[in-house]
Image (cartoon, rainbow, N blue to C red; front, side):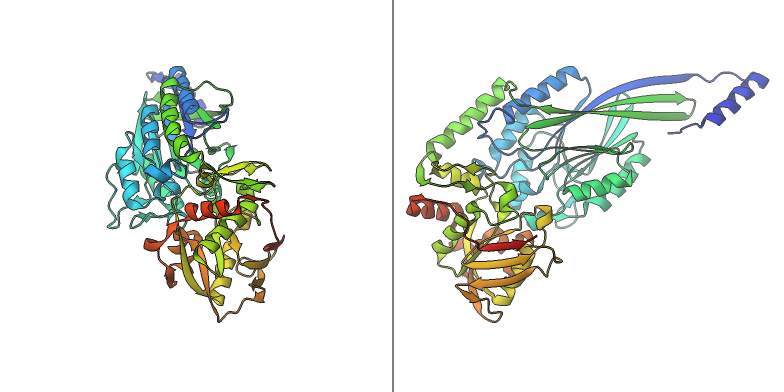
Length: 505
């Protein structure tokens, strides 16, 4: 590719006039391509007027009809967490995507929630190209069915596509022996190789934290970054590089229209690209009949088993993402108390990111099995470990270390009163811990209820991995079941916060 400066063009004109050299024919071609992005869509039990697989299928069909060159990309976090996935480990989600037909799929961190074996099984069922340049088997080989990149020849416009799975999946999920490298360094090397191979445009389909996405954008090495993970509707374009994310649950599906003007003159080839952006709101949109019929069949299975009332609340019950990841929340208290009481632990530390309903249940609501499984969809079990007081303190410091980022590691607790100063540096934020009315004793041993994901060191709770087990994973009950029992025992109750987490901001 060569961009010819204006003064060089003038010199070429003068030379032609003096020597009457034969004219070199110039060919100009215009190519249009649309990239369509969805990310973080994992629920079939969507009863709202926006989002869901039926409306996603409608958007894809409409865009395919309107655009001869469409690349439909899925940027991960689809097989979990959801109600039905807790039973079939995401098999129904892959079936629905096979009906819709992605052109590229990149796994997010939640694709590994059910372990390596389930991940491989689900990816093996997917009938679309799978990309993840930073994902490898334990021996360093590429996974069956996966590629690092793909080169798309769109009417002579060469588009290099790089896939990047979530680099923090080993912390946030359970990829087992799979090896995941850093996103930035992997993308940079792959972009160089694609440009050397003739790519006119570099597109990254990724599932990573927005801080990583923005760092990639700032390099200017990538023309278009299609991302997931943050559940934000994002369209950012600095004139060189564009970053797009489509919120969650297909509430929005974002289209990026690219016009490429290709000029070829002799051995010189010049390509200019122009981008425009169309976030497509699905509110009130008609649902694709075939896909929605299958969704309805899945929901009928769930309804029969899950619409059983187990308790009634006389106050609001808050499970909003912003609450459970940043402060004491009524749903966090309910879950943590249920876990502690089920195993008889001194305290509970459970990650706010494991609570997924993202809603407020108003006073007077009946709480069902479905509600609890919606909140706790990962199929985790409730284990009990032993930690010293010093280890409890270190673990709480980890929990409060990334509150500003909305990290899922934020601790929802029971059996403790914890004070933390978030104006201090991470690692030095916890100012007071009381257990059973007494100050935390660094040398004492405490029994701690937690979930098996954190027990493997997930969400940065590395000390839990080697902690002695009182209730082992293989002996533990489902966390959701323990919370259901707690709700049933409470019967009619008023959810409340009681000052167990006190934060200075």
